[in-house]
Length: 460
Image 1: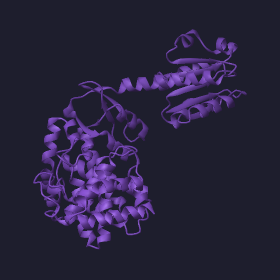
Image 2: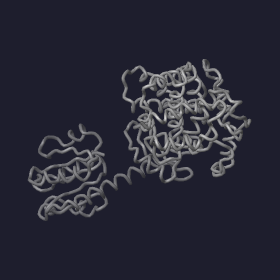
Image 3: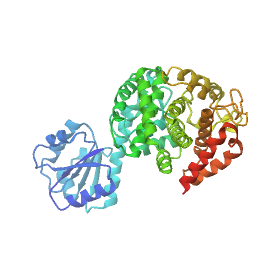
Image 4: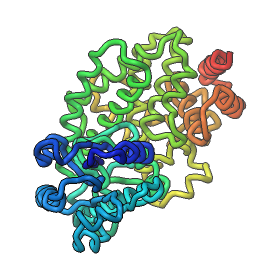
């Protein structure tokens, strides 16, 4: 939000500027004097002005005329007048004084609290007005839902984003091509909001354009870890969303290959896995994208210790990780690994049915990826358990392939991590100890030993 501060050239200008900056650090302030050329030129060069703050003392006598020109140019916006008793009578007419909705008067001598209250009231009016203007009527056929947690992997999106207010009214809460605050998204998520909405045609354009553009970022060398992890998360989002809306295309296969190759290069035998896990779990609520990354990074680390042809094996596991929950709409399913889990009963009957069916549905999509073999078998088995109480077949640890065992083991670890308030090696150690009685035998035996070794290295 941008404010125009009309200075008067007297001693009050400096303390006013200080109080604005110290109390409203996110308010961008453009300062000028009425005597310094055409005020409208200054406004045009400054961009969108939402608020005017005026030091009325020592202003020219045509202040009211100047304000009329400004308001004609900008429309109705709040004005905070800072003035003494004499300048109120000299410069402010009855119309200005009586319009208390958008005009706020702070009397001198200057008191910080009074100025802060006036500016805050003006900002509140701006936000309320912008929100009212942003409310529109749509049907669900007009909009494409996007899980609110996905907005944590971006800082801005190219199109307006809406929140549902009533059955047919939606309010714009993110403006396209403008940065937004993750704290803002978090506040909505804490209130139980699960979806935000883009217009359907714009959502498709967003995906099409982003898939073409994001591939270019994989050509950049020496990217810092945090940025590379965000790139991986965004790639997962675009792959999954595009498949859900359309299908598997050559562009999607190419992006998937770039993402997997980058993941392979990212996790090496000397990688600080503790640091990587901390960077992935940057908030308490693990999303599908974070789940996918943790699964790939941990599986890659185990494969390196097994001295397999880890690139070929990682291709299979990574694609399986991307697709495993593609038909599930609730991130909380990350916490469920068994049909006997009591937590499963907290979901709706339709959600539970989707959960029972999603392994085979994901396997069908995997068969559309040329160049990735056996991924459909991994997906069909990824909810099996070593104790034969998994689904859909209920097979045991000796009947599962080793690569399926790696995937199932890591998935169970990540599922339990999703239920923790933070990540530490000690948290991971406790999870591994919980899994040990059931996961230490059959084809789980070697992967589990190597997982224990990884945890020990993280603790040292």
